[in-house]
Length: 71
Image 1 (cartoon, rainbow, N blue to C red):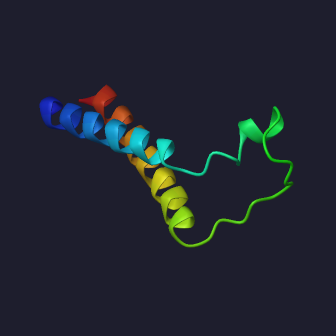
Image 2: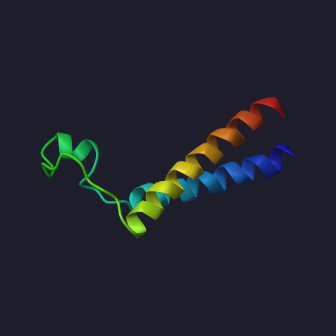
């Protein structure tokens, strides 16, 4: 069971890293330090799907990490 959870954790980590890297770069901390000066960026289309998928993968990553503590 532990090996299966470890493999799932690694896959989730890789997918989450890729999702974060392909997101739009102008929103977030880069805008604070000299990026674009827009106050709020509304996500639409594929960008919204990437953002939502990143959140779900982060929740799943955390859940598997907690499950690994108890196995």
